Amino acid sequence: MSKQPKFSPAATPETQHYWDGTKRGELLIQQCDACASYYFPPRPFCPKCASRKVTAKKVSGKATLYSYVISHQLRAGQEPFAIAVVELAEGPRMMSNIIGCPQTPEALQLDMPLEVAFEEWDENITLPKFRPAKA
Image 1 (spheres, helix red, strand yellow):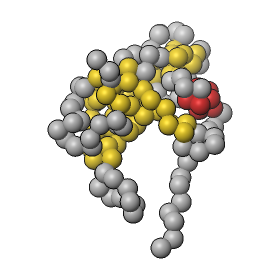
Image 2: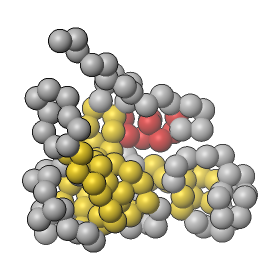
Image 3: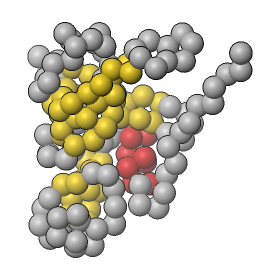
């Protein structure tokens, strides 16, 4: 059986700051300098007011579980895993994975508090994932 390839996200000029931040263990989200809205994914203009005056800011990494599905379509030796939408404390939602807890509906409760954790994917990319927040 051949080994399946590992696909990696590719940094672009619009997303390079985000990937540089995750590599340092920081979650950088853009904030509009005109209307103060935070937004994700990265882009060169604010989706709320269209201003091009935006700044990448380090955010808290705190979030809540907004929605998820548990993937059972697995490669050999892989366990089921949650594909989640988390809502950051600063407002934007982002897709990620939930780690550090059983991947079951009993453990993955909507609105559960989460915190960011960083996982090196390859030499160029570090992924933000979320785990249950410590009490």
